[in-house]
Length: 159
Image 1: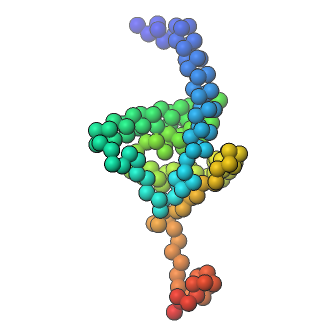
Image 2: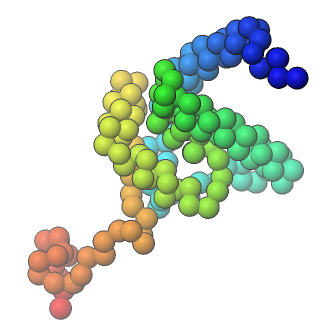
Image 3: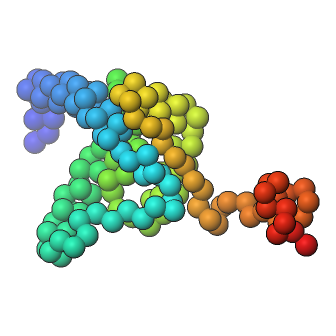
């Protein structure tokens, strides 16, 4: 019953699939990251995709994008131990999938200095501006009114 699992044809197909996904990630991930708008990770900018389209088209497109995102996340997890760009692949997968808390998780991953520098270096190589990361208002430190905490232009607002 489980003989197919040990067959050489399955091993061959898995090898081919591994090579194809590795090559695909080397092409697709940079292509996606370079084309992201600079304010994609800025929570002050709303993300509205397919606004004004038919609801059935929106549901179908979001469903397909979620499936693609899950595949990217699984491939990224595999690439943590296999050759490939694991963290970047998972970041692209997360940006495709819709779930509660998605933006906070994206912000946490993009805030890793090595990931942020790698992406911005790639964007600079293709003449794109750096990504802007703005913290969520719940996580941002709110300045208090006083002489020590406000910038020089805003001291007139103090007590």
